[in-house]
Every structure is written in structure tokens, then in C-alpha cells.
Image (cartoon, rainbow over all chains, first blue to last red; front, side, top):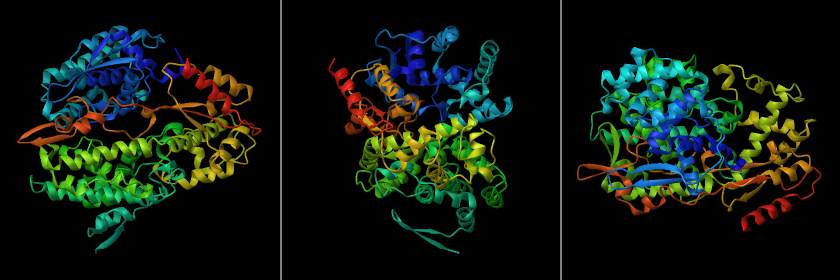
Length: 174
Length: 420
């Protein structure tokens, strides 16, 4: 891959594995979750109402779009726009994400509501809160989402499974 | 006691609460007078030397006005008001010198420092605790967007917030451009709260349009200015080189205050707040006499305005930089310090991009009881949010170490690429 695309390498590879990602929100959460496991993403995340969010990633998608690397399909018919992303052409990939291939496919099949919950839990775990405090915080910061106890439990279980399999890189997350 | 602050943007800012005056007088807050708001913009626009001190007071002033407006539509108790004011005043208190350049090289994080200063063993913390024992925690929650009254966090940090409104107005005033201006009073007058979110009544649509356009112009004309970005790159490379030399035990001129940072040690708040713009400038003045050729050269470039050449990229991506690296190599110049591609996503500021629902909340307009994204009402905002031409700049030196022009060859190569 040419060095002018180096900084986008992982985003390109992610789209290459996933094929198509339905929604900007979904890309945001997938990248955050992968980064928390130690995947080498350089984007900075901070907490933004709907969970961890990266302005850099948003602008990078804009850039890849104007570079003709990715295709953005915008559905503008509802109250809010919706986006879908895929690669526009074959591009050499660096194989940084090979070991996450199955996980990426699994994450891409999840609803973004669920990914939002999972990444919010990761964020609060990183902040050092124990499980009961995290559940409380979710009820405060995500009051409008009305997450049920079952959903919260299944998100914790999901996290445990992927942490067991891929490890958890506490330092890399920010 | 009443204090009158003369502010160039809002004229008189009157503060009559002692605890706020105490916060302003704390040593952690006073430090912000030594940290410039726009860092290297000063070399492009010589008026742009205002500090984070005035921006922080301005942000609190707008927060006060916004909360006063919202009191017309919802109940806001005195505690919530005070927490909002403190969060606005302190939201930038953790910024280091030349903020994100420093952060990038030194792997520090100003958001974390802000929280550490509010919660740690500091004057700011003692003043907040004197107001109420759980105040520091709640102020930190507002800044981290975890506060129970979400609209307060929204006012401080969202797509339309008092932080941005103040810095756009203030930056455009000091930079000397007029396109950062908008009707801030009308925006505040049109604010409503709906499900704990801030929404704008339809009557404020035109003022918000002006604000989004101001943000757009300021981004492309000021924050992503090629000269400013080039200076920032120089500064970044100076710090990168000095840190590298320190790690190799080769740094001949040591600056005491920077050593703990170079060592990557966990530094405490006391050490951190000693760092300001003057420390960095003093370091650059000292390092211009370094025995290391690269460090010396970069410092002289910084001090005597011998900028990298900024070349706007027009050819399609991807393309290879190998040939340019070869030219530099022939001049014994290390591409790590003399070649860089800059892109908008490297800039800490951003322009308005319309997110999805549940991604980053868009600006909402309330019309006849319904909230919709602003692009549903404004064609001009729709046109500039996303899908615009993005500029990339390639930076390389104009001259080799002997003062012979090398940029002409590089430009020639790039022009040929363009025509391929």
C-alpha cells in the first residue's frame, strides 16, 4: 500500500473484511471495540452521549470518500440521515486485522444499539468503575435508551467472551 | 464583592460570586494566561495571541446567559447553575502548551489533566469543595458528559455549545477576520430543552445558520491554514527530535522542566502546571545552539520563519512518496523530520458534519413541536455538511543544509505526477 494511505490502512482493512458496514455509528463502535482489544487503530475516542466517539474517524471517512477509496450511500429520507459504507475498489491491505476477522464479522452482524452498550461498558471499565457502578451509570447517561437488565447482562457476557479470546489492552483504549 | 472584567468580545463581564473569583485567582487557572488559545496561529495572524484564560472566562459568561435563558423553560436549581458555571470556567484548565502538538509527542492528554486538576490536591479542588463537598465530582461529570442533567453537558460540549461559540467569536476577533461572527444573543435566546437535549427554536434558525457557516470558514481559513499547520509541524518535529535525543542520551542542552516529560514519567499536577508556552519557546531558543544538526536546523527554521514548503495535493490517491524521500536522502535529510502529509483529520478542530441519530447528535431545530436535524430546514447547511472538497498539504524543506534550493525538484516531480 502506498504510504499516503498508511494512516487509513486499518479502516480500509476493516471495510475489506466486513464488506459493507451499515451506519457511521456502527463503524465508530466496531473500531472502538477492536481498539480496546489491542488492534492498532490510531483514532482517539472520547465519551460523547451515545458512547465512545472519535471525531478523527468521522473526518477520515469524509477523506476516504473524497479520495474515491470508499463509497458512501446516504439515505436522507427520514428525520436523520443514514449512511452505508463499502470499499470502492480493490486495495492492497496490510493484514493487521487478520486475527480479528471472525470478530469483525460478528460485530458487523450485531445491532448498533447493542454495540453502543458494549462499548460504553468498555469505556466505564477503563475508567475503573466496578460492575454495579457501571450499571448505574448506564441508567443515568443512557436514560433515553431504556436498556433492560437482560440487555446489560448479555453485553457483559459478550465482553467476557471476547476478552477471554482476544485479551484486553487497557492502555491502548484512549 | 463585585469584579468587572473588560472583555473585548462582550464588554463588561461582571462577577459577583466570591467562589468564582477564587477559582479565577487560583494558580492552576492563572497559568492559562501563559497558554495561547491558538498556539502557532500567531505566526500566520499576528493578532492571534489571546490566551486560554480569556476564552475560559468568556465560556463561563455564555454559560451563565444560556442557563438564564433556559430558566424560562425549565426549572434549574442553584446547585445545577453553579456546577454549570464551574464546568464552563474550568473545561480547558488541563491544556498544556501548544496543546495537541505537545500531547502528540509527549503522550499526555489534556482532558485527563483537566479532570486531575479538578479532582486532585489543588487550589481549584479546595475552592470547589468549600462550595459543596461533592462539587468537584459533579463538575468533572459535566465535562466528561456523565452528569445527570445532560443538558448542562450539552451546553458545554456538543455541535452547538458555549465553548465553540466563544472561541469562534474570540478567535475571529483576534485573528482579524469577520467571517467568524454570528448573532450569539439570538442563538441563546432561542435555546430550549427537550428530553434533556438542547434544541433551537425555529426563530433562531438563521442565527444558527450563521454559526455553522462561521465554523466552516474558520476551519478552512484559520484552523487548517497551511502556514499555521506548517509551523505546528515544525514544533512537533522539534519536540520529537529532542525527545529522541534525550532517550539516546544525546541531548546536549537539557531543559529541567521538560525532563520528567521526556522520561515518560508519571508527573504530578504540580509539575504539570509549570509547563507553559514560554517553557517551550525557551527550549527552542536554547536548542538552536545544539550540536545536533537536525534539532539546530529545525529550531532556527522555527525562530527565523524559514518554513517548510506547503504544496497542495491535487493528484489522486494513493501515490508514492518514495521519489521525494530519495531526493531528501541524497541531501542527507531525514524524511522523518522533513516530510509530512497533512490532512483535516489531524486537526483538533472540526467543521460541521451531520451525524446519524445516536452517533453524534446533530443540531436540532424545533418547529411546531417537532425536533428535526437542521439540514431539514436549511439548504445552505445541507450543502456544506460533508461532501466537500478536502485539501491535503505535503510539507518539505525549501533548502538543504547548505542553503541550496531543493523544493523546485520536488515540486517538479509532483507536477509530473499530477499530469500522469
